[in-house]
Image 1 (cartoon, rainbow, N blue to C red):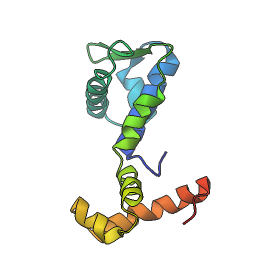
Image 2: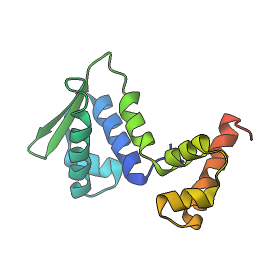
Image 3: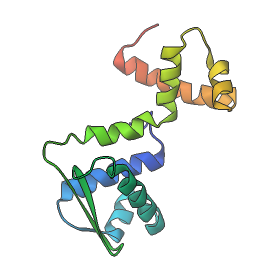
Image 4: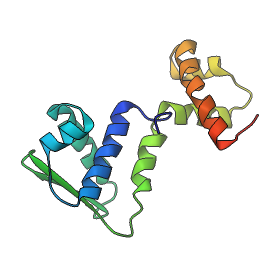
Length: 140
């Protein structure tokens, strides 16, 4: 998970997991302690999640009690990995892999140009993928 996701995305996924697993109301303090972030970050995460869950009406419901307590419910037959995929597909490394797959003739410099970023930034992310490809036994 850490190979692909930013710390913010990891925290959002942890929060989803926590709210679904506890099956009760969680206070903002409890979420802060668990995720080790500020209350403002928790509220920002919740705003982002509310927007995301609007794509799946009645499948995942986030309940908010005056920004002090929160709970989450999901339809039993709704696979939560669909929500998780949203975060993976937005990740930099996902886009890098997608670029490499769609353009095997291109290199990291081409990707850096396409992303308007430096080659060193792309290389730093690409190095993280080596371990991932070794785990999945993907070879050239």
